[in-house]
Image 1 (cartoon, helix red, strand yellow):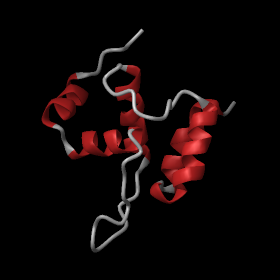
Image 2 (cartoon, helix red, strand yellow):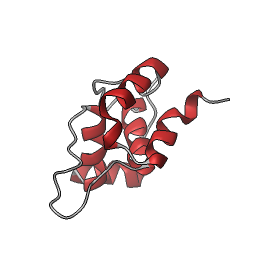
Image 3 (tube, one colour):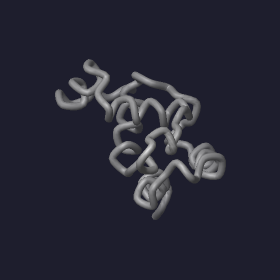
Image 4 (cartoon, one colour):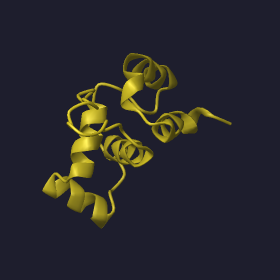
Length: 97
């Protein structure tokens, strides 16, 4: 069953905010950390949390099921350079005891 997003999250979805675009990029495996000329734009824990919210709410399915350990592990293996240490930790947190 899909969950309902809070008003702030819905605002980000409706306006296609930068947070929304980052989460969708993660879910669709369409991210380039080197797209910024000055710094490496890696995904952070907040991006992972918002991506999970979008997926649980049923708004964006994406190419990777963030509730599946194997899928998340494969995502990290394929695109490890996309994620900060905190983002990796957030991706794996639901699977740790």
